[in-house]
Figure 1: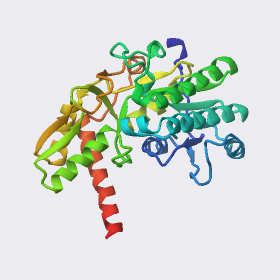
Figure 2: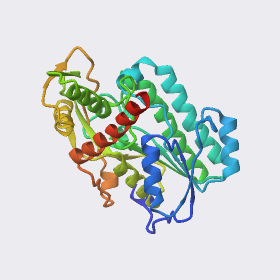
Figure 3: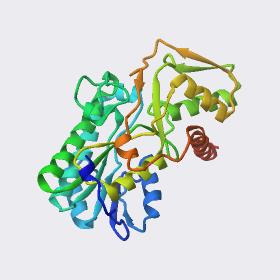
Length: 325
């Protein structure tokens, strides 16, 4: 893999970069990070462009002619949403990624960064998870559909890079959180879900807070602006066909995560773990050494990031309350 790291970093200055999915958490952070690079950011509203439609996607790329594309668009959700609507998660995510990649290829866009997910790796993957463990055994059933869509996307990106001299990079982040996260009890990932629950328990003076699962699974989390810092680093420095892991390298149990969030939120009640609910994979931490040995490191500690995320939630929560008043 070392031969694919550029000796002279690519400048993003004045490049026209389309951030697909700019309204999502990663898309917003990517726009923030790219703004410091002096590039020209292109976006498309959802009502303007249905990325599941290949002809529409092709016409949009052909018309706007971006120099680079960042695929941050996706249908996302937590365990409950993934397990309840697998067909939607597979179809929507596969079509979004495949349409953008194929249309980019047809329109001559040579630089694409495709964002994946750590769920592409097997349920029983050896820890920490290296990139070469992809497709070595069965996936975690509760998010298999989403994982399959992401695997299809990274494989197509790899094949275009290998066979058509394109620079289509795929990055696989660990669990993300931060500004612009989704706070919806049905679709949220673990950190926003816990922030919502802890805040609700605080303001209602609930003596207990129930956590889904045993609290024992170990997870790795990365603040979203650290991710986009890594993505920009990859755009500038990496030209290989193989996907790259992007993680913090630190793991924490769901139980300890819940306790930390309660400290940040200011809730001092008792945590109750409902072991009748599924835990998912018991341990998942990625080996991000292929990136970190190139001197990239995350900057935001977990507790600091959680405090920023909670303040962002309060802004969203208060806005909703004002609208409903």
